Length: 76
Image: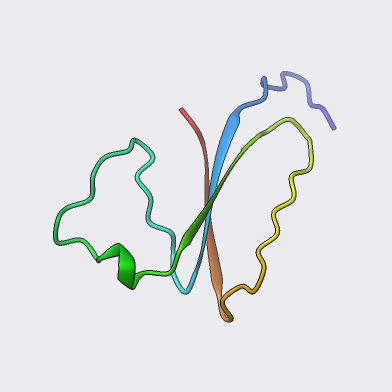
């Protein structure tokens, strides 16, 4: 479906994590040294895609049970 004045496809980043919101640094800025140790957090799964009306599939085998959270934004 296309709308009048539709934008060109954009790069989209999506981050998915079990148990809590994925904390990411879109500008690749380092986290403070006293930030939660990565080894204590659930893994963040990251996807890159385009906003071009194409379907993208992502399969996660044996996902952690419970709630999952996602963060998505237009890349710059």
